[in-house]
Image (cartoon, rainbow, N blue to C red):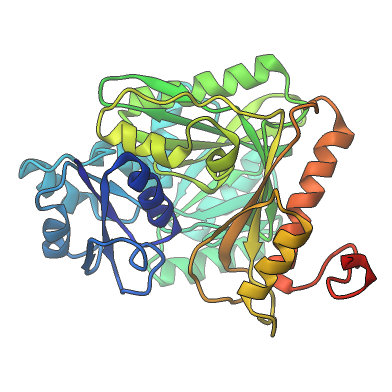
Length: 403
């Protein structure tokens, strides 16, 4: 049975390993340390850096495909692996557009995809000129490496913009600037594509951000017109095809106030906005990713319920005294249908340590705001309990409420 090498030992590799077990496959993990989430569970771990060509070669040896938990592997190393016969998926010529935001914007512009106005930043005056031309506020971004709100600065002040640019350029950070989009909400179109060229798309979801990182996902996105949903899915499939993506991919989108779509980011791997598929879709993003990189026929991505809500378990400011084991005990006593996925991470403020999926009853409707709100409330209540050991509705797990 196939061995798939995954570069990076985070939670995405851990959950891909779980999917591989069901398929009889092995996920070999290149991890920085043995206590990383995927290294804790995989029987086949190579310790080393994703920036070390020798470590990459060792991890790739004898595998059927090499893929990624994150996008930060130098593409020049991947080019070497490809030249040596390694089946790298997605290939480096596609992955670069998830690594380099400026290259991504230029490529999407060539394709005619909807994107914000943008410009490269080589000195502070570039941002001041851009703001004068396109209006303030503007969004300054690190071209490489930023995620979960890091490496992003939003400012409506030219003096502040100059200070940000000067500081970051002095640190050697490559920058770009974009027009700030007036949007009503953020969406994500998750798709998968195989080397054969087969594509599959899950329903478009709504993502809710907290301090720059994803906190909640509603699948499918409530009150999204069929026309706009189809447009988002087709756009994501077209991007995957034209860029030559293989595997699962998320196209993060803004739904603007005038009802149009703007592409924000690309992720060429399983993605936080697709975690709901583990319990709410016929084929999870993790199984689909394995199918894609091995060029299997893709699975059915259709949802199994009118709505599924995922809520991230984000670390509390201080870890509760109550053990996670006891928190799980109380959660399952109160909410036996909650599906919990923990990552094996230590707790610290705002760290993603797990997520909870709540699958809505089959009798509900995505067009019923009260039904959607009730499912969302339960997912968020469960996630908050797991991170804080407190019920946001005041329930007492040891009192009369628990009887």
